[in-house]
Image 1 (cartoon, rainbow, N blue to C red):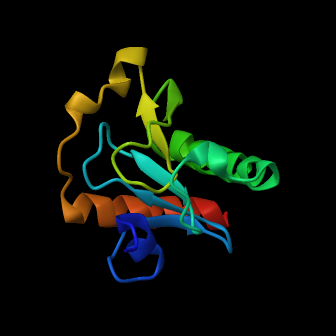
Image 2 (image 1 turned 30 degrees about the horizontal axis):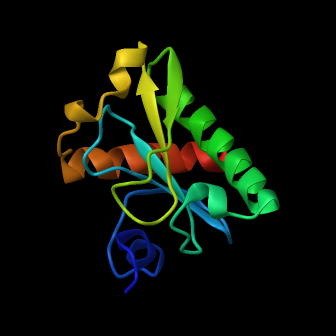
Length: 131
């Protein structure tokens, strides 16, 4: 059975996309820890991030770096925090969360975001990808 993220990649479930290429997809989390919380995934379903082949893991991290830069341009923050837990969905994924302090990476702070805010933010972020 395909994971939630595979279903997003296949277009069965909509997402608020930031960017994608042939291998990776970045989109906004619908239960963000902070505004701009993004997920970056390989399109190929792999449960554990460190099961990715070395070259693909390297390319993923370069893609993650690009998305973090875009988030930092759009969302006022000190840094973009990075977290890999991998327990919520059995599909490798990297969380990018705009933060002011390390305690901002607390998933207990996650709450549903409005579809309107996610849609507007995803458009602004997509424009930065093309710039």
